Figure 1 (cartoon, rainbow, N blue to C red):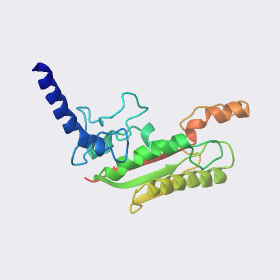
Figure 2: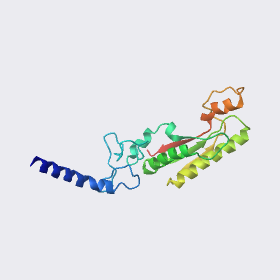
Figure 3: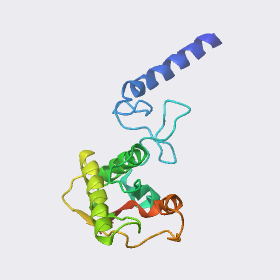
Figure 4: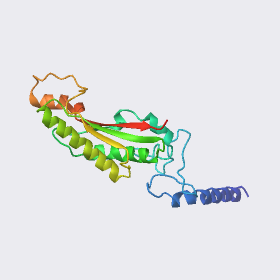
Length: 191
């Protein structure tokens, strides 16, 4: 008799979880309920179908209030030396960021500001930083960010965040200045 009860209980639990598996939808690792809502734990992270995963792909996706908790690093994209193309690591960061911004109703506008390191002429660095900012804007708009209130600006080598001696060998200097080759995304919220 006890085995029959366990069997019935297991069948009931299986039937309740079946709709979640069917609605795994956009992300295979995300559990969804029968209404296609993402199942979220008490830490507001998605419940995943795998025990091991590299990242919580829908973290903050359904909860726009967490958009205010994004760190500066989560809102900064880094570039290779003398490049304005976004590498695959930074694209993954922008994918996460774009889903958060698009889902957030309180984001009124976005400022995208590009920077360059001190190597090269100021006029070239300003143009390079503008191209970097435009590349980020284009990528975010391809992911659904409305460009209605998006400001793009390139500031060149202004506002350096590194302290590097320009007498270093070139390869070391380029490595030292990596954090200056960036685009920062600032979010402006409705009041």
